[in-house]
Length: 251
Picture 1: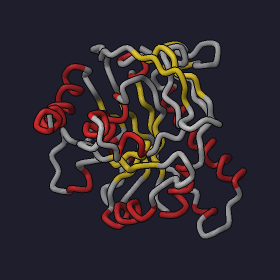
Picture 2: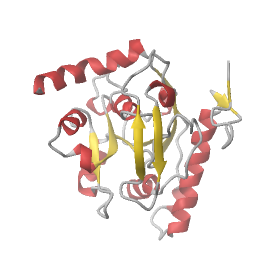
Picture 3: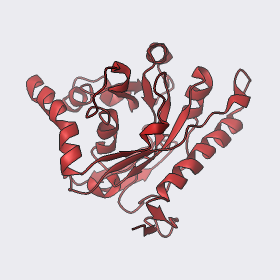
Picture 4: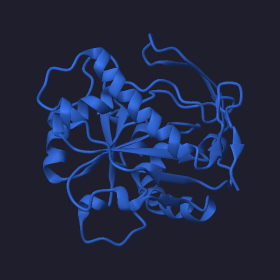
């Protein structure tokens, strides 16, 4: 079983590249050295967007080991367990996040930032089901906490195609529940649809560095990241709204 997961991990980025015609846009917006926080929208089932993001740089030749992986904040229940799914997750680069009070493991993240690794967090804390399309939920301030602690840029990112590639039929969002989702029902199938991650221009909120920032201010800053992600999505789907979750696809 271990060898199977290792083999699957090796072929995964190539499968996504050719089966889903996976593209990365805006690579120039990633820093050439030093850490950054990639912040995309979250959609679809089977965590396909998570695995694609963590392995997105595998296909590029680089002598810099810090540009060969992306460390993604991932629910600790699945990232440090001993079940088959956890074993699969562990073949990538998850940062185990507690949803029961402990939050971000800063001792681990401190080391990653010291090395100049790329981080990622999906600020919605919710993966969009098929009927939600490209509507965005509010962004939680974890992305801002990381930004203010490490003083590294936030890279707003559009995740395109995943919501229909690995469709989630239902996923009821309950922010007061742990975990904040309920009645997940997904199709155990990956469809051959085109996938894109589009990295936007870096955001820096330097005026908040080394200051006491209130919870409300944290949410306000997170909403600014959300606005930039929404703008990036509009490059592919315009006029997305609550009643028209897919808007109009641009040609």
